[in-house]
Length: 419
Ligand code: EPU
Image (cartoon, rainbow, N blue to C red; front, side, top):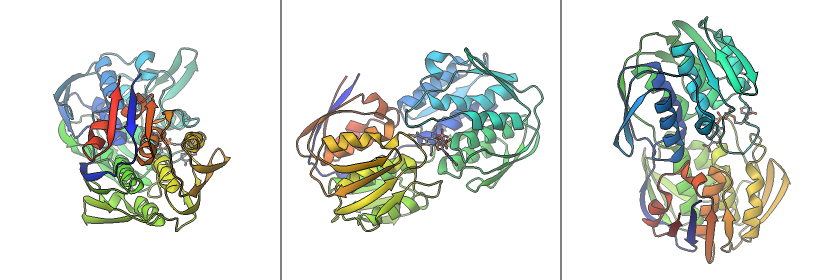
Protein backbone atom coordinates (compact mmCIF):
# COMPACT_ATOMS: atom_id res chain seq x y z
CA UNK A 1 0.00 0.00 0.00
CA UNK A 2 1.35 3.46 -0.88
CA UNK A 3 0.94 6.61 1.13
CA UNK A 4 1.57 10.30 0.59
CA UNK A 5 3.21 12.53 3.18
CA UNK A 6 1.88 16.03 2.55
CA UNK A 7 3.21 19.25 4.05
CA UNK A 8 0.29 21.67 4.21
CA UNK A 9 0.19 25.39 3.64
CA UNK A 10 2.05 25.85 0.33
CA UNK A 11 0.05 27.72 -2.32
CA UNK A 12 0.08 26.01 -5.73
CA UNK A 13 1.86 28.35 -8.12
CA UNK A 14 2.90 27.81 -11.74
CA UNK A 15 1.58 26.04 -14.81
CA UNK A 16 0.17 22.54 -15.26
CA UNK A 17 -1.24 20.54 -18.17
CA UNK A 18 -4.39 18.49 -17.79
CA UNK A 19 -4.09 14.78 -18.70
CA UNK A 20 -6.32 12.84 -21.07
CA UNK A 21 -9.83 12.03 -19.84
CA UNK A 22 -9.93 8.68 -17.99
CA UNK A 23 -13.61 8.20 -18.72
CA UNK A 24 -13.03 8.77 -22.45
CA UNK A 25 -9.94 6.54 -22.58
CA UNK A 26 -11.77 3.55 -21.02
CA UNK A 27 -14.69 3.27 -23.52
CA UNK A 28 -12.40 4.06 -26.45
CA UNK A 29 -10.09 1.23 -25.38
CA UNK A 30 -13.22 -0.96 -25.18
CA UNK A 31 -14.26 0.15 -28.68
CA UNK A 32 -10.91 -0.90 -30.16
CA UNK A 33 -12.36 -4.45 -30.10
CA UNK A 34 -14.56 -3.41 -33.03
CA UNK A 35 -11.73 -3.65 -35.54
CA UNK A 36 -8.68 -5.86 -36.13
CA UNK A 37 -6.95 -3.00 -37.95
CA UNK A 38 -4.26 -0.90 -36.28
CA UNK A 39 -5.38 1.76 -33.79
CA UNK A 40 -3.02 4.31 -32.25
CA UNK A 41 -4.27 6.14 -29.16
CA UNK A 42 -2.46 9.23 -27.86
CA UNK A 43 -2.93 11.35 -24.74
CA UNK A 44 -3.98 8.32 -22.69
CA UNK A 45 -3.61 9.13 -19.00
CA UNK A 46 -0.96 6.88 -17.44
CA UNK A 47 -3.17 5.73 -14.56
CA UNK A 48 -4.01 2.39 -12.96
CA UNK A 49 -7.51 2.12 -14.50
CA UNK A 50 -6.15 2.58 -18.02
CA UNK A 51 -3.37 0.05 -17.41
CA UNK A 52 -5.96 -2.43 -16.10
CA UNK A 53 -8.13 -1.91 -19.18
CA UNK A 54 -5.10 -2.43 -21.44
CA UNK A 55 -4.32 -5.62 -19.53
CA UNK A 56 -7.87 -6.84 -20.18
CA UNK A 57 -7.47 -6.10 -23.90
CA UNK A 58 -4.30 -8.20 -23.89
CA UNK A 59 -6.11 -11.00 -22.08
CA UNK A 60 -8.83 -11.15 -24.75
CA UNK A 61 -6.18 -11.33 -27.48
CA UNK A 62 -5.17 -7.82 -28.55
CA UNK A 63 -1.50 -6.92 -29.00
CA UNK A 64 -0.52 -3.69 -27.31
CA UNK A 65 2.70 -1.77 -27.90
CA UNK A 66 3.48 1.25 -25.74
CA UNK A 67 4.91 4.00 -28.02
CA UNK A 68 5.49 6.14 -24.92
CA UNK A 69 3.75 6.25 -21.52
CA UNK A 70 0.72 8.06 -23.01
CA UNK A 71 0.46 6.38 -26.43
CA UNK A 72 -0.27 2.83 -27.49
CA UNK A 73 -0.59 0.91 -30.74
CA UNK A 74 -3.29 -1.77 -30.68
CA UNK A 75 -3.45 -4.58 -33.23
CA UNK A 76 -4.71 -8.16 -33.42
CA UNK A 77 -8.04 -9.83 -32.87
CA UNK A 78 -10.04 -11.37 -30.04
CA UNK A 79 -9.10 -14.91 -28.99
CA UNK A 80 -11.27 -15.32 -25.87
CA UNK A 81 -14.46 -13.75 -24.57
CA UNK A 82 -13.92 -14.67 -20.91
CA UNK A 83 -12.73 -11.85 -18.63
CA UNK A 84 -10.93 -13.26 -15.58
CA UNK A 85 -12.35 -12.17 -12.24
CA UNK A 86 -8.91 -11.28 -10.96
CA UNK A 87 -8.75 -8.33 -13.38
CA UNK A 88 -12.35 -7.57 -14.34
CA UNK A 89 -13.51 -7.57 -10.72
CA UNK A 90 -11.22 -4.61 -9.98
CA UNK A 91 -12.44 -2.33 -12.75
CA UNK A 92 -16.05 -1.28 -13.23
CA UNK A 93 -15.15 -0.08 -16.73
CA UNK A 94 -14.46 -3.72 -17.69
CA UNK A 95 -18.18 -3.67 -18.59
CA UNK A 96 -17.11 -1.48 -21.54
CA UNK A 97 -15.62 -4.56 -23.21
CA UNK A 98 -19.07 -6.15 -23.34
CA UNK A 99 -20.20 -4.64 -26.67
CA UNK A 100 -16.97 -5.49 -28.53
CA UNK A 101 -16.92 -9.07 -27.22
CA UNK A 102 -20.56 -9.60 -28.21
CA UNK A 103 -20.05 -8.20 -31.69
CA UNK A 104 -16.97 -10.29 -32.39
CA UNK A 105 -17.85 -13.58 -30.67
CA UNK A 106 -21.65 -13.43 -30.12
CA UNK A 107 -21.20 -13.98 -26.37
CA UNK A 108 -19.36 -12.70 -23.31
CA UNK A 109 -18.71 -13.95 -19.79
CA UNK A 110 -18.44 -11.18 -17.20
CA UNK A 111 -18.06 -10.89 -13.44
CA UNK A 112 -19.85 -8.18 -11.50
CA UNK A 113 -17.58 -5.27 -12.40
CA UNK A 114 -15.61 -3.67 -9.56
CA UNK A 115 -14.56 -0.04 -9.15
CA UNK A 116 -15.13 2.66 -6.57
CA UNK A 117 -17.50 1.95 -3.72
CA UNK A 118 -19.63 5.09 -3.97
CA UNK A 119 -23.06 3.62 -4.47
CA UNK A 120 -24.99 0.63 -5.81
CA UNK A 121 -23.61 1.05 -9.34
CA UNK A 122 -26.02 -1.34 -11.00
CA UNK A 123 -25.39 -2.98 -14.37
CA UNK A 124 -29.00 -3.66 -15.33
CA UNK A 125 -29.19 -0.64 -17.66
CA UNK A 126 -26.40 -2.31 -19.68
CA UNK A 127 -28.20 -5.63 -19.81
CA UNK A 128 -31.58 -4.12 -20.71
CA UNK A 129 -29.81 -2.22 -23.50
CA UNK A 130 -28.19 -5.40 -24.84
CA UNK A 131 -31.59 -7.16 -24.83
CA UNK A 132 -32.94 -4.33 -27.00
CA UNK A 133 -30.31 -5.21 -29.61
CA UNK A 134 -31.41 -8.88 -29.56
CA UNK A 135 -29.18 -10.17 -26.76
CA UNK A 136 -29.93 -12.52 -23.88
CA UNK A 137 -28.51 -12.34 -20.37
CA UNK A 138 -28.30 -15.09 -17.79
CA UNK A 139 -26.93 -14.77 -14.30
CA UNK A 140 -25.40 -17.50 -12.19
CA UNK A 141 -23.01 -17.80 -9.26
CA UNK A 142 -20.16 -17.83 -11.81
CA UNK A 143 -21.17 -14.39 -13.12
CA UNK A 144 -23.02 -13.14 -16.19
CA UNK A 145 -23.35 -14.95 -19.52
CA UNK A 146 -24.52 -12.65 -22.30
CA UNK A 147 -25.26 -13.81 -25.84
CA UNK A 148 -26.04 -11.91 -29.02
CA UNK A 149 -26.60 -14.45 -31.75
CA UNK A 150 -29.37 -12.51 -33.54
CA UNK A 151 -28.12 -8.91 -33.61
CA UNK A 152 -30.46 -6.24 -34.85
CA UNK A 153 -30.31 -2.47 -35.00
CA UNK A 154 -32.70 -0.91 -32.51
CA UNK A 155 -34.43 2.18 -31.24
CA UNK A 156 -33.81 2.17 -27.49
CA UNK A 157 -34.71 4.38 -24.57
CA UNK A 158 -32.13 3.87 -21.81
CA UNK A 159 -33.47 2.97 -18.38
CA UNK A 160 -31.48 5.88 -16.92
CA UNK A 161 -29.03 8.45 -18.26
CA UNK A 162 -26.10 6.18 -17.58
CA UNK A 163 -22.72 7.22 -18.97
CA UNK A 164 -21.24 3.75 -19.51
CA UNK A 165 -24.56 2.22 -20.68
CA UNK A 166 -24.76 4.99 -23.32
CA UNK A 167 -21.20 4.19 -24.34
CA UNK A 168 -21.82 0.43 -24.55
CA UNK A 169 -24.96 1.09 -26.61
CA UNK A 170 -22.95 3.31 -28.97
CA UNK A 171 -20.25 0.65 -29.41
CA UNK A 172 -22.83 -2.08 -29.96
CA UNK A 173 -24.84 -0.03 -32.47
CA UNK A 174 -21.60 0.83 -34.31
CA UNK A 175 -20.96 -2.82 -35.17
CA UNK A 176 -24.54 -3.71 -36.18
CA UNK A 177 -25.61 -2.96 -39.76
CA UNK A 178 -28.49 -0.49 -39.97
CA UNK A 179 -29.69 2.58 -38.11
CA UNK A 180 -29.95 2.57 -34.33
CA UNK A 181 -31.31 5.36 -32.16
CA UNK A 182 -30.26 5.76 -28.52
CA UNK A 183 -32.61 7.97 -26.50
CA UNK A 184 -32.17 9.23 -22.93
CA UNK A 185 -28.44 9.17 -23.71
CA UNK A 186 -25.70 10.69 -21.55
CA UNK A 187 -24.08 13.83 -23.00
CA UNK A 188 -20.65 14.07 -21.27
CA UNK A 189 -17.50 15.16 -23.17
CA UNK A 190 -16.27 11.54 -22.91
CA UNK A 191 -19.40 10.32 -24.74
CA UNK A 192 -18.63 12.86 -27.49
CA UNK A 193 -14.99 11.75 -27.63
CA UNK A 194 -16.07 8.12 -28.02
CA UNK A 195 -18.30 9.22 -30.92
CA UNK A 196 -15.33 11.06 -32.52
CA UNK A 197 -13.30 7.85 -32.29
CA UNK A 198 -16.10 5.67 -33.69
CA UNK A 199 -16.59 8.07 -36.62
CA UNK A 200 -12.86 7.87 -37.37
CA UNK A 201 -13.10 4.08 -37.72
CA UNK A 202 -16.02 4.38 -40.15
CA UNK A 203 -19.26 4.66 -38.14
CA UNK A 204 -21.80 7.39 -38.99
CA UNK A 205 -23.03 9.18 -35.86
CA UNK A 206 -25.31 12.17 -35.30
CA UNK A 207 -26.33 13.78 -32.04
CA UNK A 208 -23.47 12.79 -29.70
CA UNK A 209 -23.52 15.33 -26.87
CA UNK A 210 -27.34 15.47 -26.97
CA UNK A 211 -29.77 13.01 -25.40
CA UNK A 212 -30.57 11.33 -28.74
CA UNK A 213 -27.75 9.65 -30.65
CA UNK A 214 -28.33 8.21 -34.12
CA UNK A 215 -25.84 5.60 -35.30
CA UNK A 216 -25.49 3.94 -38.68
CA UNK A 217 -23.48 0.81 -37.90
CA UNK A 218 -21.15 -1.07 -40.15
CA UNK A 219 -19.69 -4.58 -39.80
CA UNK A 220 -16.31 -3.73 -41.36
CA UNK A 221 -14.53 -0.92 -39.55
CA UNK A 222 -11.01 0.36 -40.11
CA UNK A 223 -8.03 1.58 -38.09
CA UNK A 224 -7.25 5.13 -36.96
CA UNK A 225 -5.13 7.42 -34.87
CA UNK A 226 -6.94 9.27 -32.07
CA UNK A 227 -5.93 11.61 -29.26
CA UNK A 228 -8.02 11.36 -26.06
CA UNK A 229 -9.84 14.57 -25.08
CA UNK A 230 -8.38 16.41 -22.03
CA UNK A 231 -10.02 15.60 -18.70
CA UNK A 232 -12.46 18.31 -17.61
CA UNK A 233 -12.72 16.75 -14.13
CA UNK A 234 -8.95 17.03 -13.70
CA UNK A 235 -9.11 20.65 -14.92
CA UNK A 236 -11.77 21.38 -12.29
CA UNK A 237 -9.76 19.53 -9.64
CA UNK A 238 -6.64 21.64 -10.27
CA UNK A 239 -8.71 24.84 -10.29
CA UNK A 240 -10.16 23.91 -6.88
CA UNK A 241 -6.71 22.96 -5.53
CA UNK A 242 -5.35 26.34 -6.64
CA UNK A 243 -8.25 28.25 -5.09
CA UNK A 244 -8.20 26.27 -1.81
CA UNK A 245 -4.44 26.85 -1.34
CA UNK A 246 -4.66 30.55 -2.37
CA UNK A 247 -2.43 29.71 -5.30
CA UNK A 248 -1.90 31.23 -8.70
CA UNK A 249 -2.18 28.63 -11.42
CA UNK A 250 -2.33 28.47 -15.19
CA UNK A 251 -4.05 25.27 -16.32
CA UNK A 252 -3.39 24.19 -19.91
CA UNK A 253 -5.82 21.94 -21.80
CA UNK A 254 -8.74 23.09 -19.64
CA UNK A 255 -11.44 23.30 -22.29
CA UNK A 256 -13.67 26.35 -21.82
CA UNK A 257 -16.71 24.71 -23.44
CA UNK A 258 -16.54 21.88 -20.86
CA UNK A 259 -16.21 24.29 -17.94
CA UNK A 260 -19.61 26.00 -17.83
CA UNK A 261 -21.10 24.32 -14.74
CA UNK A 262 -17.72 24.01 -13.02
CA UNK A 263 -17.14 27.73 -13.66
CA UNK A 264 -20.51 28.51 -12.05
CA UNK A 265 -19.47 26.51 -8.99
CA UNK A 266 -16.17 28.44 -8.76
CA UNK A 267 -18.04 31.76 -9.11
CA UNK A 268 -20.49 30.67 -6.43
CA UNK A 269 -17.50 30.50 -4.03
CA UNK A 270 -16.05 33.78 -5.35
CA UNK A 271 -12.99 32.19 -7.00
CA UNK A 272 -11.08 34.53 -9.34
CA UNK A 273 -10.57 32.81 -12.66
CA UNK A 274 -10.53 33.59 -16.34
CA UNK A 275 -9.90 31.77 -19.60
CA UNK A 276 -6.84 33.22 -21.34
CA UNK A 277 -7.94 31.38 -24.48
CA UNK A 278 -10.35 28.49 -25.21
CA UNK A 279 -8.03 25.92 -23.60
CA UNK A 280 -6.12 27.87 -20.93
CA UNK A 281 -7.53 28.67 -17.51
CA UNK A 282 -5.96 31.08 -15.00
CA UNK A 283 -6.94 30.83 -11.32
CA UNK A 284 -5.65 33.63 -9.08
CA UNK A 285 -5.80 34.18 -5.28
CA UNK A 286 -9.34 34.88 -4.12
CA UNK A 287 -11.25 35.87 -1.01
CA UNK A 288 -13.35 32.73 -0.85
CA UNK A 289 -16.98 33.22 0.20
CA UNK A 290 -20.22 31.40 -0.42
CA UNK A 291 -22.40 33.38 -2.82
CA UNK A 292 -24.91 30.66 -3.76
CA UNK A 293 -26.05 28.56 -0.84
CA UNK A 294 -26.68 25.29 -2.67
CA UNK A 295 -24.51 23.12 -4.90
CA UNK A 296 -26.24 20.16 -6.52
CA UNK A 297 -24.85 17.61 -8.96
CA UNK A 298 -26.74 16.97 -12.18
CA UNK A 299 -26.68 15.16 -15.47
CA UNK A 300 -24.22 16.77 -17.90
CA UNK A 301 -23.97 19.68 -18.70
CA UNK A 302 -24.87 20.29 -15.04
CA UNK A 303 -22.34 20.09 -12.21
CA UNK A 304 -20.57 16.69 -12.35
CA UNK A 305 -20.78 14.30 -9.40
CA UNK A 306 -17.08 13.50 -9.84
CA UNK A 307 -16.18 17.05 -8.75
CA UNK A 308 -18.44 17.17 -5.69
CA UNK A 309 -15.85 15.90 -3.17
CA UNK A 310 -13.16 18.47 -4.12
CA UNK A 311 -15.87 21.20 -4.15
CA UNK A 312 -16.77 20.31 -0.55
CA UNK A 313 -13.13 20.90 0.45
CA UNK A 314 -13.24 24.29 -1.28
CA UNK A 315 -16.40 25.12 0.69
CA UNK A 316 -14.54 24.44 3.98
CA UNK A 317 -12.20 27.30 2.99
CA UNK A 318 -15.00 29.70 2.01
CA UNK A 319 -16.84 32.09 4.31
CA UNK A 320 -20.48 31.11 4.79
CA UNK A 321 -22.67 28.02 4.67
CA UNK A 322 -23.58 25.87 1.71
CA UNK A 323 -25.76 22.79 1.20
CA UNK A 324 -24.05 20.23 -1.06
CA UNK A 325 -26.36 17.62 -2.59
CA UNK A 326 -25.32 14.53 -4.59
CA UNK A 327 -28.44 12.49 -5.44
CA UNK A 328 -26.54 10.09 -7.74
CA UNK A 329 -24.32 8.13 -5.39
CA UNK A 330 -25.39 6.86 -1.97
CA UNK A 331 -21.90 6.83 -0.47
CA UNK A 332 -20.18 9.82 -2.07
CA UNK A 333 -20.53 12.05 1.01
CA UNK A 334 -19.32 9.72 3.76
CA UNK A 335 -15.72 10.94 3.44
CA UNK A 336 -16.69 14.27 5.08
CA UNK A 337 -16.10 12.71 8.52
CA UNK A 338 -12.39 12.73 7.58
CA UNK A 339 -12.59 16.48 6.83
CA UNK A 340 -14.27 17.01 10.21
CA UNK A 341 -11.36 15.17 11.86
CA UNK A 342 -9.12 17.74 10.14
CA UNK A 343 -11.15 20.57 11.70
CA UNK A 344 -13.90 21.20 9.14
CA UNK A 345 -17.43 22.06 10.25
CA UNK A 346 -19.63 19.82 8.11
CA UNK A 347 -23.01 18.44 9.13
CA UNK A 348 -24.11 15.33 7.27
CA UNK A 349 -27.87 15.67 6.89
CA UNK A 350 -28.36 12.30 5.14
CA UNK A 351 -26.31 10.09 2.79
CA UNK A 352 -26.84 12.55 -0.08
CA UNK A 353 -26.60 15.95 1.66
CA UNK A 354 -24.06 17.83 3.72
CA UNK A 355 -23.98 21.38 5.05
CA UNK A 356 -20.53 22.95 5.06
CA UNK A 357 -19.85 25.93 7.34
CA UNK A 358 -16.68 27.87 6.63
CA UNK A 359 -14.07 29.03 6.65
CA UNK A 360 -12.30 26.57 8.94
CA UNK A 361 -8.60 26.04 9.50
CA UNK A 362 -7.82 22.44 8.60
CA UNK A 363 -5.04 20.60 10.45
CA UNK A 364 -2.86 17.79 9.16
CA UNK A 365 -4.07 14.27 9.98
CA UNK A 366 -3.43 10.63 9.14
CA UNK A 367 -6.19 9.62 6.71
CA UNK A 368 -7.07 6.95 4.16
CA UNK A 369 -8.64 7.61 0.77
CA UNK A 370 -11.95 5.82 0.17
CA UNK A 371 -12.55 6.45 -3.58
CA UNK A 372 -10.80 8.29 -6.42
CA UNK A 373 -12.56 11.61 -6.00
CA UNK A 374 -12.69 11.61 -2.19
CA UNK A 375 -9.00 10.64 -2.31
CA UNK A 376 -8.00 13.67 -4.38
CA UNK A 377 -10.27 15.83 -2.19
CA UNK A 378 -8.29 14.69 0.87
CA UNK A 379 -5.05 15.56 -0.96
CA UNK A 380 -6.42 19.09 -1.57
CA UNK A 381 -7.52 19.32 2.07
CA UNK A 382 -4.02 18.27 3.21
CA UNK A 383 -2.43 20.86 0.90
CA UNK A 384 -4.63 23.59 2.42
CA UNK A 385 -4.11 22.46 6.03
CA UNK A 386 -1.70 23.57 8.75
CA UNK A 387 0.88 20.91 9.45
CA UNK A 388 1.60 17.54 7.93
CA UNK A 389 -0.80 14.85 6.75
CA UNK A 390 -0.39 11.23 5.75
CA UNK A 391 -2.84 9.78 3.24
CA UNK A 392 -2.93 5.98 2.98
CA UNK A 393 -4.37 3.85 0.21
CA UNK A 394 -3.14 6.29 -2.41
CA UNK A 395 -3.41 3.64 -5.16
CA UNK A 396 -7.04 4.60 -5.33
CA UNK A 397 -6.02 8.15 -6.32
CA UNK A 398 -3.54 6.64 -8.81
CA UNK A 399 -6.52 4.96 -10.48
CA UNK A 400 -7.61 8.37 -11.77
CA UNK A 401 -4.74 10.89 -11.54
CA UNK A 402 -1.39 10.52 -13.31
CA UNK A 403 1.81 11.03 -11.29
CA UNK A 404 -0.07 13.24 -8.87
CA UNK A 405 2.69 14.00 -6.37
CA UNK A 406 5.31 15.04 -8.94
CA UNK A 407 2.85 17.19 -10.85
CA UNK A 408 1.72 18.97 -7.67
CA UNK A 409 5.31 19.25 -6.40
CA UNK A 410 6.21 21.09 -9.61
CA UNK A 411 3.74 23.75 -8.38
CA UNK A 412 5.34 24.08 -4.95
CA UNK A 413 3.50 21.36 -3.01
CA UNK A 414 5.52 19.38 -0.47
CA UNK A 415 4.53 15.75 -1.13
CA UNK A 416 6.55 12.58 -0.65
CA UNK A 417 5.40 9.08 -1.58
CA UNK A 418 6.19 5.94 0.37
CA UNK A 419 5.43 2.63 -1.33
N1 EPU B 1 -28.17 7.52 -11.92
C1 EPU B 1 -29.49 7.69 -11.65
N2 EPU B 1 -30.28 8.29 -12.58
C2 EPU B 1 -29.79 8.70 -13.77
C3 EPU B 1 -28.43 8.53 -14.05
C4 EPU B 1 -27.63 7.93 -13.09
O1 EPU B 1 -29.96 7.35 -10.59
O2 EPU B 1 -30.55 9.23 -14.60
C5 EPU B 1 -27.31 6.90 -10.91
C6 EPU B 1 -26.96 5.48 -11.27
O3 EPU B 1 -27.89 4.54 -10.81
C7 EPU B 1 -25.61 5.34 -10.61
C8 EPU B 1 -25.02 6.74 -10.71
O4 EPU B 1 -26.11 7.62 -10.89
O5 EPU B 1 -25.73 5.00 -9.25
C9 EPU B 1 -24.04 6.90 -11.88
O6 EPU B 1 -24.62 6.39 -13.03
P1 EPU B 1 -23.87 6.02 -14.38
O7 EPU B 1 -24.43 4.76 -14.87
O8 EPU B 1 -23.92 7.22 -15.28
O9 EPU B 1 -22.39 5.78 -13.91
P2 EPU B 1 -21.31 4.94 -14.64
O10 EPU B 1 -21.55 4.96 -16.10
O11 EPU B 1 -21.15 3.64 -13.97
C10 EPU B 1 -19.58 6.88 -15.09
C11 EPU B 1 -18.17 7.19 -14.66
C12 EPU B 1 -18.13 7.52 -13.17
C13 EPU B 1 -19.05 8.71 -12.93
C14 EPU B 1 -20.49 8.41 -13.45
C15 EPU B 1 -21.43 9.60 -13.37
C16 EPU B 1 -16.87 5.87 -16.17
C17 EPU B 1 -15.94 4.72 -16.38
N3 EPU B 1 -17.33 6.04 -14.94
O12 EPU B 1 -19.98 5.75 -14.30
O13 EPU B 1 -16.80 7.90 -12.89
O14 EPU B 1 -19.12 9.01 -11.56
O15 EPU B 1 -20.40 8.00 -14.83
O16 EPU B 1 -20.95 10.65 -14.12
O17 EPU B 1 -17.13 6.62 -17.10
C18 EPU B 1 -14.93 8.38 -11.54
O18 EPU B 1 -14.36 8.73 -12.58
O19 EPU B 1 -14.45 8.58 -10.39
C19 EPU B 1 -16.23 7.71 -11.65
C20 EPU B 1 -16.78 7.04 -10.65
